[in-house]
Length: 159
Image 1 (cartoon, rainbow, N blue to C red):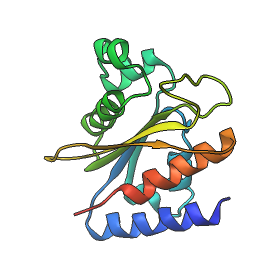
Image 2 (cartoon, helix red, strand yellow):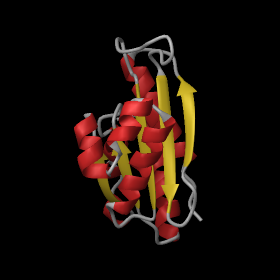
Image 3 (cartoon, rainbow, N blue to C red):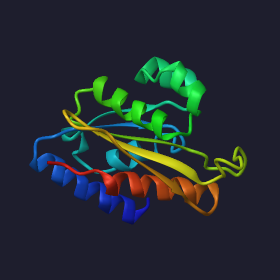
Image 4 (cartoon, one colour):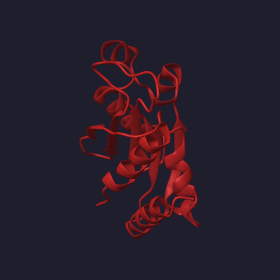
């Protein structure tokens, strides 16, 4: 287990629980790692509602309501898709906030426009505008995915 990720998740859980809030996740490139690190925390059922692992475009459409047009126009690895994934996770859960990630972890799949290490992370909140960032991460597939999980967990805020 990654102690740093566990501690970040534990802190997030304490914060969510103190505010009586719940979170959901929508993951592509991390393949459920965010949900795993959250559920590694004992008692996380009090603040974690559910996780969606939507690796394929079809899953993004079916489970999260990502629009086919968005996928066609911008690609699965885009701010627009990350935003729709986060909104979909929020709308299809009992959560108050949601994290969504999509990216190219490599070692293949990169392009000139979107090289390996390109990730988009979005955070959705009830009654607020969804926030999204783009990062260019370096390292192995494992390291890119690990950095994505860390950034996703650190970037959420709870009111």
